[in-house]
Length: 101
Image 1: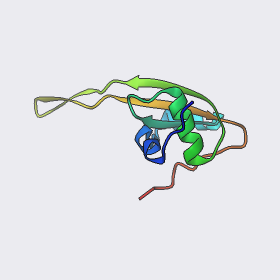
Image 2: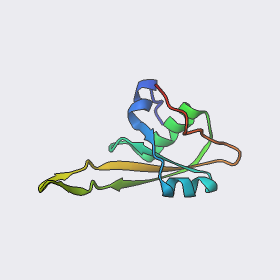
Image 3: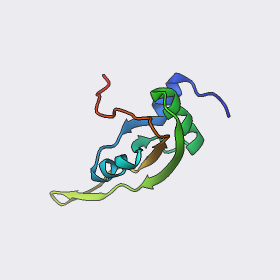
Image 4: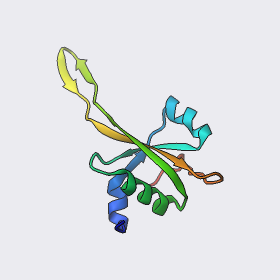
């Protein structure tokens, strides 16, 4: 597996997702991230391990289609994005509440 540069890590992992579902799965040691549409599971695993210094057991991904919304009779569409559910080894944690500036 090729090594990923630090610049590429920030392109792969966009930001953590905080929702009801991500909060629920966090009790099972899963963390949810918004990732690049072109990133693969091995790239995501390597990026999370390098960025947060944790051991990743598995990565599950899904492509989320953007919703169609209307505002004052004008139709619009939110962008599509990719989610990654990352399961960490026992004893590893990630603090997703810290805001990076």
